Length: 188
Image (cartoon, rainbow, N blue to C red; front, side):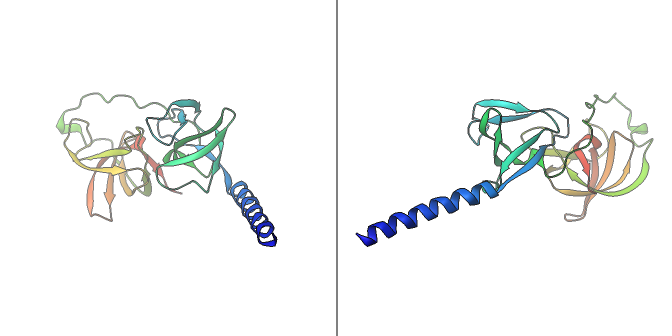
C-alpha cells in the first residue's frame, strides 16, 4: 500500500511540475507581417485548420514557449487556444503598420537602375504569403528573371535602394540581385 501512495504522490508532483513549467513558459509576443495584414489563428497547427480568429498587425498575444519550434506556435487569445505561424510573431512591438505595396509601373530597361542611392545595412527577408519566400531578381523589375528564392528570416545586406527596390547581397551564398524593399526588414 505504501508503494501505491508513493506512486500517486509522485504522479501528482509530476503533473503539478508540468503545470508550473508550462505557465512559466508563456511569453508575450506581437504580430508582425511585412504587408500589415492580420494573422490567422487556427484550431490546428496546419493551414488546413479552421480559422478561429485573426490578430491585427501589432497585436500582443500570449505564446506557449514550450510549443515553439518549427512553423507553428500555440497562442492564447480571447477566443481560446489556437495556433498561428511562428514566423509572423516577434518579441518586440513592431513599428507602424506598413503601407500597401503599389504595383510598379512598367519601365524600360534603360531606366531600371535610376534613383538608387547607396545604403549599407543588414536586413531580414519577410515574405507576405504563407508560402514564405521572396524572389531575388536579376534586375529591379517584376518582369525580370528570378535569380534565387529566400525564405523568412534569411539575412541579406542591402547595398543600394530606390525606395521600391533594393540591391541586396547574400554573403552566405555569394549572390547579388534585387528584391522589393517591402519584403525586407532592417535588422537593428
